[in-house]
Image: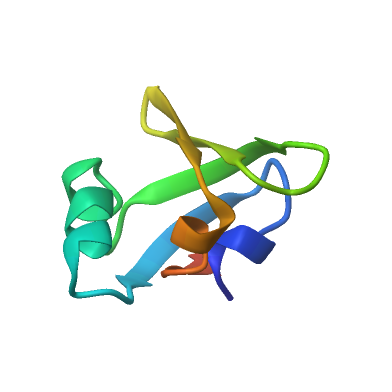
Length: 74
């Protein structure tokens, strides 16, 4: 399942980031790496962007970026 389709307020573990280009590098530089725990805090009315908690930080991700992050339930 991708982060874009993840349920709200559920602890999730990142399984993989599926992009080798600059977008994937940017996501990994922000801390979205394999094994990290994330939680979707909210979505904009049309579903884009997503608000995500990663550790003590909150990030906003475009839906297209969140689609690149594979997750599993913690």
